[in-house]
Length: 366
Image 1: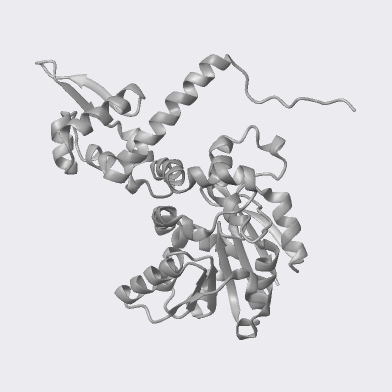
Image 2: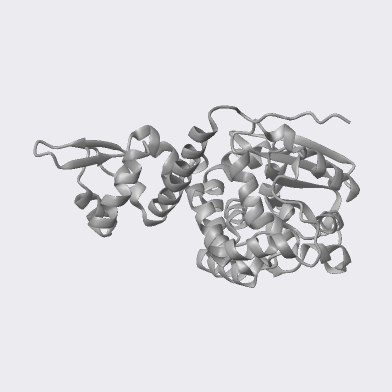
């Protein structure tokens, strides 16, 4: 048998290593700046400012802010200039702010700069140990990451869920039915961001959020109370046990799962559970990372190294708990379709999501 090498992008490896070291460092610094509101502070100015002024606006130390701005300037994120006395001035170009600030909504890439630093702080040593043991790492070991995922969901869903995604589902028929009043479940709802947005938009429908995190559900319930929503319920339940729960048999008209199935330790059982809780003819929207199952087909994916790293640090280990399947984030289209059909979904289509090249929408009907 002859081995055939599949080449990744070429170039001088020493130059590439230097780029890797620099980009990793810049990502860490950007994650800090995003968390502390420094990009937001910079976005609020209409002309270059000193480090002291930027720090004062953000409520931070001037010396630390200057060091951070120096990273951003040498990394090409902010622009550096000088006043008449040679004092350094910094500004964030509008085109950069359009991708880095919270106002960017679905175009916000700045929020992702926090992901690798948070996962490293949460699980670095345990991941290294898991390479030897092969064991998984439980969901509860990632509290900071779950808070980040709530922030990420807020950044993405608040702008696009009601205006773009749901109107695209089943040619708008789901929205029409939600306006009239149906029963909807969001599986793996975490802190309930998507569910609460839907509940506000469609008051005639009822919504049930399901998750295994007691802390996330408590926060979701508190937010529902703050918003005065009476059409929402949150339930702590393992998705893999749904198929054995007669209380929810054939009780939902529409089920959603946003980037939730690949984290399940028993994803096939979870998908069978979704099939179990759907009414006949009801619909299931599984939104998951746009990737292929064969790694060779992901070599040209612009964010493949980032996504595989997030998978290594979180999705894979939580999916390996209790001898789980360990799909990982990059399980891919082919494996997803295989499991959906094995779960009982005979009608499955992969539908484009408006203005979202990051995810696939697997639309299924029971």
